[in-house]
Amino acid sequence: MNSMNRLAAMVSLAALFPLVIQAAETKGNVEVVHYWTSGGEAKSVEVLKKIIEKDGFTWQDSAVAGGGGSAAMTVLKTRAVSGNPPTAAQIKAPDIQEWGRLDLLASIDDVAKANNWDSLLPESVAQIMKYEGHYVAAPVNIHRINWLWLNPVVLKQAGISDVPTTLDELYAAGDKLKAAGFIAIAHGGQAWQDTTIFENLVLSVMGVDGFKKAFIDVDDSVFTGPKMIEVFNALRRIQSYLDPDGNGQDWNLETAKVINGKAGMQIMGDWAKSEWSAAGKFADTDYICVPFPGSQGAYSYTIDSLAMFKLASKNDTPGNIAARNDLAKVALEPSFQYVFNQNKGSIPVIKGLDMSRFDSCAQASAKDFAAAEKTGSLAPSMAFNMSTSQAVQGAVFDVVTHFMNDKSADAGKAGRQLLAAIKAAQ
Ligand code: BGC
Image (cartoon, rainbow, N blue to C red; front, side, top):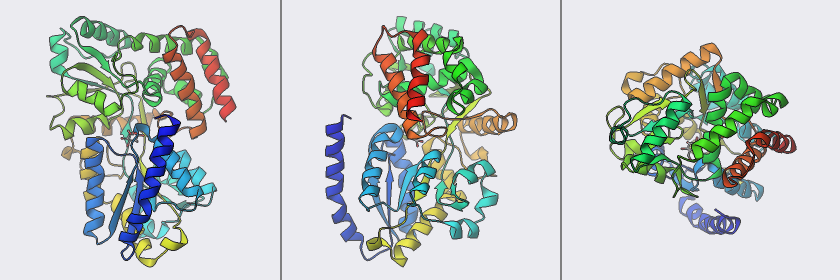
C-alpha cells in the first residue's frame, strides 16, 4: 500500500470509531486491533469474538488488512499517539517492550495469577509477555516460519516423486514445475514475503548459530563472510521460480494458487495452513508440509500476542476493565487454544495440551519445537518481529526488496549493505 492509500485507510478507519464507540457505550467493551483478515485468519479470530460475546461483552473489531502487520502497526501508533488506544492489539515480543517503555500498557497480573499463567506458559514465553516483571500481554499461539507447503497432485503431474529436502532438490523441483507449465513457487512480491524467503535461506545456509549471530548479535563477520553471499545467490536463484504475476500480491491469494493447482509450492509460515483448512483441505492428502529445505532440526517462530493498553479516560470503566480481563483469560484457556490454533495453523502456546487433536503438520511442529528447545535450535524470527525492533526489521526489508527488484544487484555486496542498514537503524 503506498503512503496515500495508507493515509486514506487510516482516515476512513478513524471516521468509523466514534460510531462504534457510541453503540457500545453502555456495555463492557473490548476493541481489538489485529491483522487477521484472510479467510482462514478471520475464521480464527471469530472464535475469540464469539467467546467474548458469549461472556456478555461487546467485541469491537478493528482489523487492518495487510499481511505481516505493518499497516496495523501504523494505525496503532496513530491511535496511541492521539490518546485513543484500543483495548488490545496484536503485537510481537520486542514491540511489547517498546510500548511498555512508553507507559501505555496495562498490567494483567491479576488475571495471570488467578489463572496460573506462570505454570501454564513456557518460561521463555512468560518472560516476553511481561514488562518490568508484570504481565501486559496474553499470547495466543506459536507459528513456525521455516515451512514449505506443497500440492502433491501438482508435484505428481510435474513428475516430482520426492519432496525437496535440500536447496538443490528445491531448485530441481522448481525446474520441473516450470517445465510442466506450473507456477513453481507461489509468492507475493511484498517486502515481508521476500524477507520470509531470505530469512529461511539464512537458516538453511548458516544454521541456527549463523541466524542468531545475524539477527540477534548483529555480528559483522556474518554479514561480510562467504555464507551471506551464498544466501543472496540462493535468493536470486529462488527468484527465478517465483510467481511471475506475484508482484504486490497478498500471501493468501498466492496460497490459493497452490490450493487450486496452479502452483506447486509456497514458502510461508504456518498461517498458510489456515487457508487450506478454510478451503476444506487436509494435511497429507491435499497438501504436504515440510521444513524449509536445509533447515530441518531448526525452528524459526513467532508468537502472536494481545498486548493490553491502558484505557483512555473516557473508556476507563469497570465494565471495560472486566471485558479486558475476560479477553486475557480466554486467550489462554485450553478450549480456546484448541479451536483457535486448529483454525489458525499454529500450535498452542500453553503447555500440556493433547496434540492428537491436531493434524500431522501441527503435530510435527509441536514435536520439532520441543526438540529444538532442548538443543537450543529455536530461532526467533526476524521477519516476524521476534528478534529485532521494527526499525531494524524495516532496514532488512528495504535491502532485501531492493535486491529482489534490481536484478543486477550484486550478491557479493548485499551483505555489507545489509549490515550498514541494520547498524543505521539500531
Ligand atoms: C502473524 C500471523 C499472521 C501473518 C500474516 C504474522 O506476523 O504472526 O498471525 O497470520 O503475519 O499476516
